[in-house]
Amino acid sequence: MTRVLSELLGAQEPLFQQSLRLLESLAGHPQVDIRLSTEIQQSTRLKLRELGLDGHDTTGPELYAALGHRLHTDEARFAALLMGDVATARDPSARIARVLQQKITNRSCFALKSVAAKKLLKANLPRKTMKLLGYRSADSMLKHESAASLFAAAWLIESVQWTKRIFTAYGKLQVNEFETRDIAIEHPSSKRWQELAETVVAAKKHHVLSFKELGSVVLLPLPADQPPLATLTATVLTVHALNEIRAAGTFLKLHQLQPGFGSIVQKVVLGEPMLPSETLDEPVSWHSLHQYFARFSRTVRTDIFEPVVAAEELAWNSVEHVLAQIDPALEFWKNTAHLGLVGVGQPVPLNLTDALLSHANQLGFNQRVVQYFKQSLRSELLLRYLSHDKLEQTVFGNLRAKLAPEMVGNYE
Image 1 (cartoon, rainbow, N blue to C red):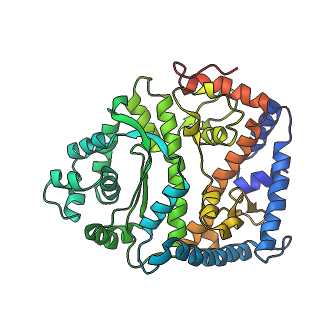
Image 2: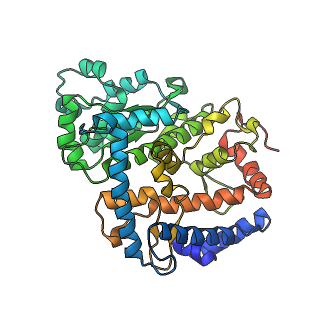
């Protein structure tokens, strides 16, 4: 059964099997790998039958095509539901922002203050952005536009040298320039931003931009020639961004008294924070730990983090569950993030995000996206092992000092 997980993950052998044996030993041999492999195969077969496919004799291209057909049906219904009485509107960004603000009420994060972000912009003026948005002065631009929206445009428009200057400036940030507040979901929609969409967004093919350090997601207007599956894709990517921002915020909070706070901000901006583990043979993703605390919040001791990080700040929203709250017909995708078809070389994921990105970008079968599926499966495997008390106590006992020893409570 470890072969199934190895094939799904495209794991490097024999290192992967050695890692599984270590996890099994530390957790008290609960056979998590066998149970998860069996569950994936059984659940995938059930999903194949829901798609009208043979649960035992479906090829990779057949599944890939069926998922694409399902997504286009879902998109038409979801977009109509989201737009409601303004179904003739061209850009769904405002409705996406509004419905997610309604469905995800816990959006607390630890992020840079707006005044500090605008100070950075003034010191490192994004001149191309200012010109494209039609402003003659920096003061006027900073007065009328939010910092997050300007950062979103600047990351797409400005030079590599500009981004390097901003990143260097992050290294000098101080804790007192950050605050706890709700994550912002912004959607600039003026004529200037619409014009930007027709040029920059259409060329760069990015319109959902998230900034963990700013605690903001920006939905830039879509160009007139919208890509397929635009509404579902934007909604899914925004929920992913909310989770990443919240996880980054708790990581920063736990390290706010450590020296060199600015370098920690840079680390968060660069990618997913990884924590070294003396117990396991590889670093542990902070996002996976954040998910663990969210899933098992009833059993996790609050004094591990409080009063620095409150229990509610450790929330994590399943993308598929959020979408099913908006449109119950999307229940099909619930609990599919770590499912995939094996025995076809590179796996064919039933992961909603991978399927959307593949079909929205009209990728062929051999170019299909699999990264979100692999991340989900790795997290699911680790979280199931950590749910066993023996491994949980060992791992978190060793990681406690890495999180912020001067702030985090004792783990017993």
